[in-house]
Amino acid sequence: VQLVESGGGLVQAGGSLRLSCAASGFAFSMYVMGWFRQAPGKEREFVARIDRSGGSTFAADSVKGRFVISRDNAKNTLYLQMNSLKPEDTADYYCNSVVGTAPGNYWGQGTHVTVSA
Image (cartoon, rainbow, N blue to C red; front, side, top):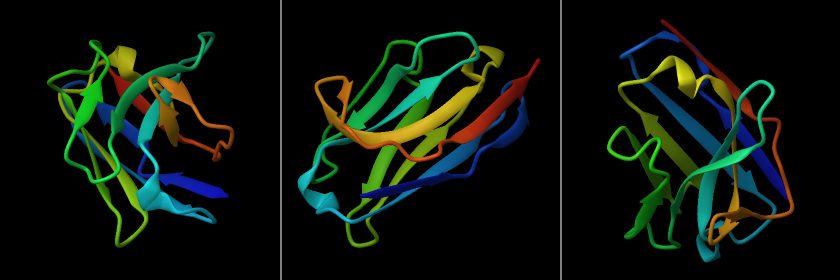
């Protein structure tokens, strides 16, 4: 199993970023997938998930209405469009399979997002 996140960077508050997660080594289209994040000094937390077909999504209250999760099963890729970014969104972002809001067993290296005030 390999999960490779990309697309992070430095952005000003109110800006946007699009994260990608390239998955390999497992049947990507058969799994509910999601994004998690870990801010400095804090526990890793659930951000959003998407069902196997991409037809249903669920997001944490902290990002609802600002972040949009999507997937392309033909490309084995998961996305997170992040809009109206806030300094509190600063974190390392990770993709993973999801059961409820709990992550699966494999983690990629993550991609870092810094939002400046």
